[in-house]
Length: 336
Image 1 (cartoon, one colour):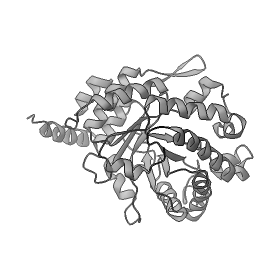
Image 2 (image 1 turned 135 degrees about the vertical axis):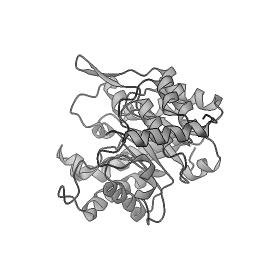
Image 3 (image 1 turned 120 degrees about the horizontal axis):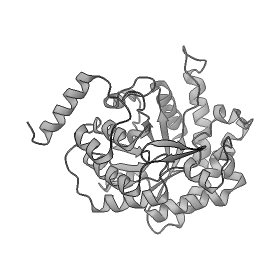
Image 4 (image 1 turned 90 degrees about the horizontal axis):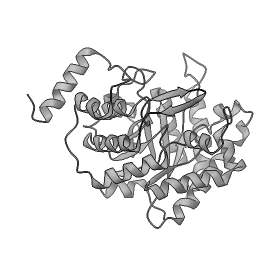
């Protein structure tokens, strides 16, 4: 059943996004170095199957298999000319699954970073980035995506360029960044400064937040910094901490841990909860159960997050920031 993200947000309910793409594709046969986007044409049945598994697990939002579907990423595989084709095809596959559902499901067109550095650190200009993202988003729109889902961004310039591309194409958009470097993005953006990234852009994003990064505890701390935002907040956390077992990456998070993560994210004010790397349909189903049975509490302190989800992998930005932030949260819970 087709709906818009804006309509679902207006219900006031906490929404559930899906889980990992790459991790689950590896379990389905994707080989190292193989672009997941090639499965759109090579194995569309597998792409459709994963979408269906997430819908069956309770996802309200499913992301297309287009994270690296921009001309810069595809150029690494001599496939830059296929950007529009692959983006459209991916959206069509997700649209088929969403339309067959008996409840509303949003198709979110995944838009990941280009992998290039902006001037003056690199050669990418804003105009070039907007053009690249617009090409991808045009394909997503043509295939039936409801919203552009800009994710795993580190640089504010790139996040803004993707937003401007969505606006050019005429699509609403969401943007999440990855706060994986001492509590900041790799390019230095703090979680509580995320709204400022989109200052002066019209229209504004439907939602903003965090995805990927490191462990579940870290992302809850990040989104807790956004609890005062007027824009709805997204949290798509990794399934615990990634570890190498031989040549395979595994994740420490159980479905039970991700259920606790979902509850703490809701307490932090998150409106869209989901999973990123390592999250299977089983983990997503566990989050669905948690969301449906949880009543929002107050914003958790860092100590409460660590006690529930385990130690932080990231350090926080500065000692003074941590002390001030944690004391504010404790006071907010009626603690002295």
